[in-house]
Amino acid sequence: MVQAYILIQTEVGKASVVAESISQIQGVIQAEDVTGPYDVIVRAQADTVDELGRMVVAKVQQVEGITRTLTCPVVHL
Image (cartoon, rainbow, N blue to C red; front, side, top):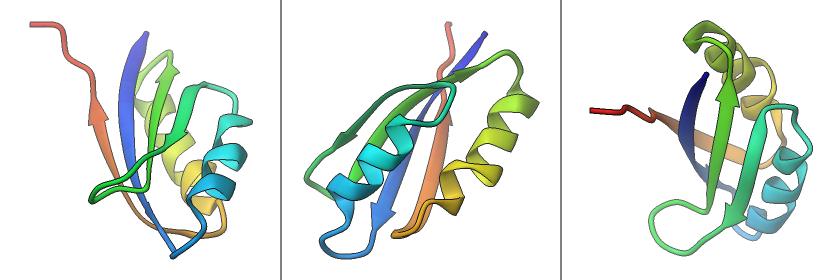
């Protein structure tokens, strides 16, 4: 199982709508609107890195109101 944090910037005023939409995507554990340089932080999981990448590109980045994403895979050192 691969997990990652996805840091999302949105259009002004769209953070709560984006977080709600993303929370409905399969593989998303949690989606919260936050303050700071990013507007939404998502924790997601998938079976493989490839599946995680496909989820981000095909589902998360397609949500209306998103301007930029940064995916940070969780590592266990």
